[in-house]
Image (cartoon, rainbow, N blue to C red; front, side, top):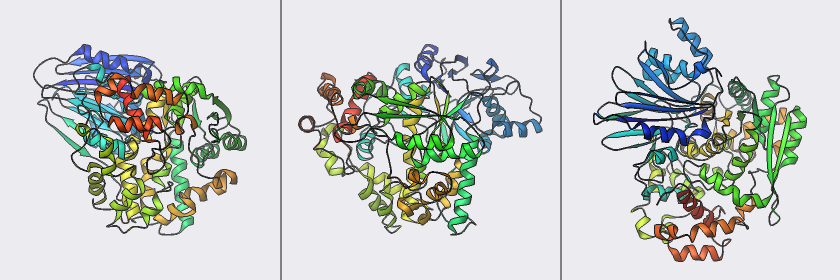
Length: 593
């Protein structure tokens, strides 16, 4: 619901207020409803506000309580803020606003770092202790809200977006070879703490970073499900269906907490349709729902309106559909890529950006179905991983998921851009070897949900919606629902082609056509098939002087891909040319030389 920024000096100097102002201004789309700044001693904070909870000026930020000696900036929403407020009032706290930001400030005053254990929601924040000069940075359990940092021996800067840090200046913008390796191996995903730029890092999900005035810091991971069978529900599918159904009801109900209307991005797939059904079970009528489609290309259908229409009719939603002509894609590409915190390759990014532009004209908050496939094992690569032994989990994951081998990647890259080792395989082996996770599937889901998902699809949804001042909420990433799913027996997730327990719920409350349909993706045929005018924009970027000077990729390989775009595909069929072009376009749009 906002954008935050700040600087902490370690050298005895004053923070660069002009740099903080530049960082804050860049994030205006994330917070078009208000702007604030605060500075004291070695710390300066900036904030852009999107009004969702407590629409009055009492909820403005940065928020200071002089009696408590605390100042905070906050991005996101604490869904249980009223319950936590009640507990704090019982402990003697008195509130001057209805804001969830004030709940964070007083919760920190009461419980310190342990305050996050009481918070249900999506959030990133910075809290400054006036007396000690200590700064605490925090991020929600699933990394739904972003938090980027850049630092040297003299200062630390932080912001909700990477481009905001670039606007502040002084960032090392050389490419990180390990991050590039991950980007080209995991279809655009670079997990925390790295980013594709060597000088920018991100706070990992479920992490608190305590920054001392001398520049030293310590990180604390405050949440991680075990992915073991510790539940008392046992193996009974009916009991699991009831438990997950109730947990999903709770997750959806929590995400309707707002002082503005709440809508739903309704693709017509199982996940978004279940959200609409949960709202109907709560007695909500005429819920605003939104769907988008594109013109067909090369025989590939570009919309799934028949399914979203069916769900809308079934539950009586106030439904809007938007059809985007193919000739809009070329101009839309730059807008979507420019809105990215980091380069991403999912072809539906442009669709989310265009859809968010339209939806933001009607509502400020939407619910969406992202995360269900990772949490409940809905993707087609999970069954082969599940067939592996626990000891063979890393190798099975690489075989099923990686875009290309280390050797294939080295053949694409200019030697100066290549990592010295197979960094992506090393990352997977380390995560798979961690204690817990009973089976190979458990280990894979643990890594996907807690290490990779925050940087796609979660980042994709946050970036595209917030660029239009639209807050997206993701019920399937409710931390209690994720804990429940982590304990669920693998078979109850894998059966029926994946997400079996969700499909069993759907069979009782959704039209059969929605539950039993082939798995769909947000179709953008013009991007998937590298059709004109998308191909023209790609060619322009990859033949630009700055691309040739940068020399990330072997030029002969780039020329070959441009000559035969459809020939070069990742293992799972994605366009290699689009992976390469997305990175280069992002670097150019953000002025990285």
